[in-house]
Image 1 (cartoon, rainbow, N blue to C red):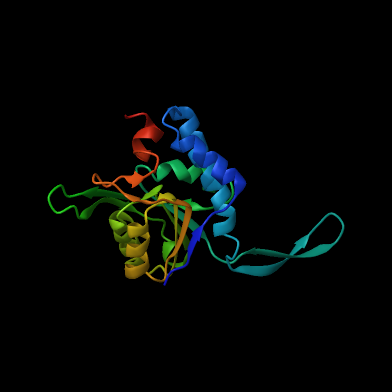
Image 2: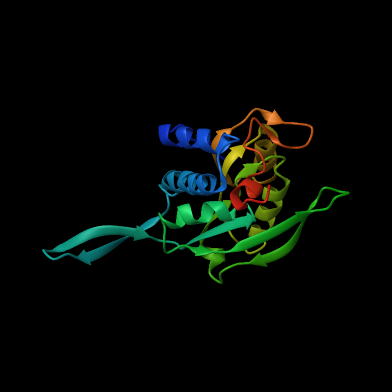
Amino acid sequence: MGKLVVFDHALIHHKLSIIRNITTQTKEFHQTVSEIAMLMAYEVTKDLPTISVDVKTPVAVAKCEKLAKNIVIVPILRAGLGMVDGILSVVPDAKVGHIGLYRDEKTLEPHEYYCKFPKTIATSTVLLVDPMLATGGSVSYAIHLLKQQGITDIRYLGLVGAPVGVKKIQKEHPDVQIYLASLDEKLNSKGYIVPGLGDCGDRLFGTL
């Protein structure tokens, strides 16, 4: 079963209180989402494989470590875009792909409408980002699309998740690590995470 990490960090707790607050306006919401993603990126990338290199300093030659694989950030459109800049502030050399999904109104199944990846993605570590892990349908389908590219190292980052979504990912993709800023209580009758933070995409882009 894929590892689940729920962050217990004072700064993340503090910033979650800001984005959960109904009175937080678009600018502060967008900035705080980015800051949480930045803080999460440190933990998510701490065990990435490295290689030894010799680096000439002004004084001597230092034995150093550098990343052995490329990193690709893949947001699920559109809310996932809000987390990209925060991660890029930590790994500025990362490339960015995009997955666009819509949900069929009758079957509720996700369907792809846009998919664009860097050419090197198959051999890269992929950070799949989407703020809300509700039923898990969209995230699971996005992982399926990534695996079709031959990717073996996929890590999902979300802000808030519900237990049903976590269970779906662990069942369908037990090889994928799940990182959440918070694991919330449940979904309500409309499929919103409770207590959650509302519609993250609308709050990020001011389309309420």
